[in-house]
Length: 245
Image (cartoon, rainbow, N blue to C red; front, side, top):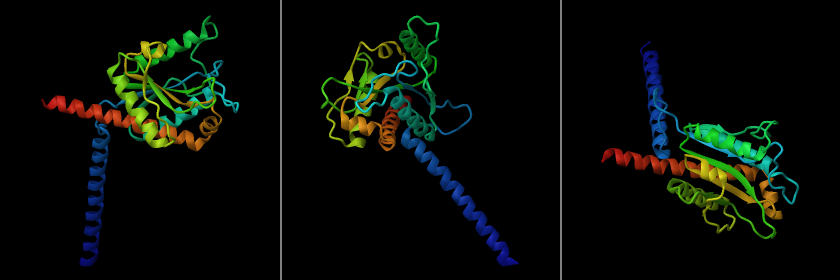
């Protein structure tokens, strides 16, 4: 009888220890990535993911026939899943092959862009990432590149981090650097830091083949999600430092 009672106490002790360790692990992960615990009343970090083009607008057409709008959505959906696994609230501008316009709109491209900006500006997001694919007249040009608005300090910081993470994760010999751009409509009109990630060149045969590969798409999404976590962690640390002063 005493032995049975001892075994029950021991099992309860082990169970309690596992719960405590589990709780500590969650706190460590949250501190590592600068994310808040799931405590009632605390606001979840929101990020907007914008898969470029869609519907009537195919975007670039790859040398292998693949459409940019499809690639943008596939990478974005993978990115959404990865961010949600880190307790980040993700808002997608689209989740299907549709454009953000009405059939009655006379200028569907302009209406589409305005709708994307409205979604971002009304989301309360700390940042937004627009996923795209690139193209050029010369076939040899390749490599992912991140664009930001020149007047956005935070946008530049986010772009540099994402560019660095893409290079480290893909390990494809890419020497491109994050680049400022003041002409892109979405970069000019969004209120939170926004970057445009051009994942690669559909005009390059080798890169177009890679971009069409689901495993490579997962790798791209993994790199962007790591970059976003790095950015959130850095800015969270700065906020905590300021609060302590």
